[in-house]
Each structure stands twice: as structure tokens, then as C-alpha cells.
Length: 440
Image 1 (cartoon, one colour):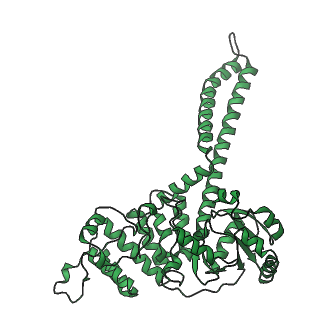
Image 2 (tube, helix red, strand yellow):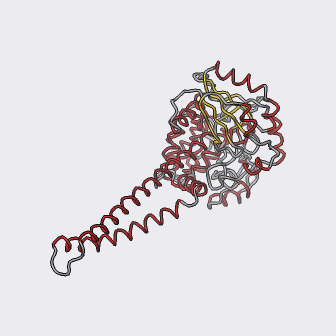
């Protein structure tokens, strides 16, 4: 139940370390605030977990309960692990212990399909114990939670920012936004500077205008003074309107980046039955989402078969989403029921949004498994994301649409109906082409 690190380059790949393998000195380093690939987790200093049969029950500490809970969870004893984390919270834990207890308690609730309880635990950890939202995005043990509506609510709270929850998440979104729109800050500076200049000029012009209206010897020219005042006031109005418009555009951009992040965490089953999150296909495939009725999508898939070879050369991976095919799968351990490697994902929004942690060998293996068509896991969550995207683009919800993604995971373009495959073959460069390399 490791909490994924946001600095993958400096740490080894994700491993579920067992308490008995961790040295006492490592535990002390962790408690002093150092965070490794597993994030903030408490480890047992010995191989023997606390036992209820101990002669002195008062020796239980928050740390020992968290460690014992982790050990129980690794054995599939989720209910007992949950009890240990709850006990840890009742033993006056320090901030690090409280964060670990709340976070791992949320993982237990996610395993049991209790989305609201998991969200409550994570919300408390975010507000009171400085948990980073990027950690929630990257942990495989929360993959099932990320497919629940409660996660979307929590993510929206974090996107709006504030000191209580998700401040770091909004900060990261704004950094990405600044990269995509690098001159927004410069524009805002000029908006503020020019507005201030126009305001100062108006401050001195108003008395002159009053003097002009009163008339008399030495009074300024009325029409000239009135014209200057009108120009200043109009300039203030225009500049303020531009500032507000720019802010609105930024919020729309932040919402789009947040939707892109949600999309990257949606689960997909490859032709080899391996389950991955869409983020793992970055640099490897260009997903094309086909959303519509069963008949419409099937016709589009049949037409795509005629261009199969050329589409494969361009890295196209077809992802059909049938409206109303709500076939909820039972909640399995490790998120979506696959093996541990199935739900292990790459970091996205966080301290290292654009970092890649997969080895060359792992990428090659994944590339070999991408075979033209995938199958959505948790179709309701896919439908929810597509409907949100449709609303953002001014398209009627549940209308037949297609969405083409870039190699870097962002939306390339979308349209009503089903795509013209011949046009897509002309539009998309082959994977080995220079334009494809620049797109990564």
C-alpha cells in the first residue's frame, strides 16, 4: 500500500517492502521526514508485529499499529488491517503517523469499495497532515478509488485549491498551465500596470473636468478634458475586462488539464488481458476513443479494419465505449483486478508531472502488447469523462463522438460522429517519423 513518490528518478521502482526487511536506522530516517519511493510509510523495526496476546497491551503505539496493519493488508486481511489503522489514530499519533494511518485506512476502504469513507480519510490527510494530492494519483492501491465518483469530487476540490485541501495540486496545475500559455503572466502584468496608469491619470483628470464644467478664467478646455477622461475610463474598463477574460481562460485550461489527468488514470484492458491505466501508454500509442451506440461503434471498427496496417504504423489504439454498457466489475485487490504490475502506473500531476519511470525493457514489452484495440474497464467512469469533455466542447451529452489523443496523452482533436479513417491516416505521421518524436 505504498504511497507513490513524486521523485521517481531518484528512487528505485515501486516495491511493496515488507516490515521485516527494513532496518531500524531506515525507520528513524523516515520518521525524521525523508520520503522514499514508498512515500511516507511507517515500517516495523523488527519482524514480529504487535500481538493482542502481549502481556502488556499498553506497549502498543501508533507506529506499531500502522506497521502491523500494513503487514495484515499485505496478507489480504483487510478488515483486521483497518482495525489497526483506526487504533493507531486513537493513540495520539504524531503528524507523520497520523498521515500514514489515514492514508492506509483510505486504501483499505478503497479495497472494500467504500468510496465515501476513503475520500473522508484522504480529505482529512490533505487538510491536516500535508498529504500531496499527487500521491493519491500515483498509488496503485487507490486505482479502484480513482474510478469512483468520490475521487472526482475530491479532485475537483483540489483543483479549486485553497489552503485547506489541494493547494499543491492547484499549484502544479498552474505551473503546467504557464508552460502551455507562457505569456499569460506578462499580459496580466501589462493589464495591471496600464490599468493603474489609467487610474492615476483619471484621478488627476476628474478635478480638471469639474473645473472645466464650472468655467471661468483659466478653466481647461471642456471637450479636451472630457475626451481625456473618457479615454482613461474606457481604457480601465477594457483592461479589467481583458484581465477577467484571461482569468476565465486560465480556469478553463486548469479544468482541461484536470480532465486530462482524470483521463490518464482510466483503466484499459489490452489484447493480452493485461490491465493498464491510460497514462502507461504515453509515448507508445495514440488512443482513439470511439463513443456511441453499439451499432455506430461496431461500424466504425469494421471500417477501421480496412486501414489496420496503416493505423498500426501510426500507433493507433482503438478504444470503443458503448453508451449504457454499465457492467460494473467487482472490486478486486490492486484496483482493477489485475496483478500488481497491471495497475502500477506512471506519475503525472505532481512534483514531476512529465517524468517517465518505465524502463526501456518495460516500455518495449508494453509496446508489444498494444494490438490495435483495447477494452475499457469501469465503463461508467469512461462515460462520465467523455460526457464532461462533451459539455466542455459544447456537444450534447451522449452524442456519438470520437476523440484522438496525442502520444503525450493530451487530446489532439475530437469530433461528432465517427472518424474518417482515410483522413486520419493522412493526418497522423508514422511512429518513426520526426513529427511523432516531437509529439512525445
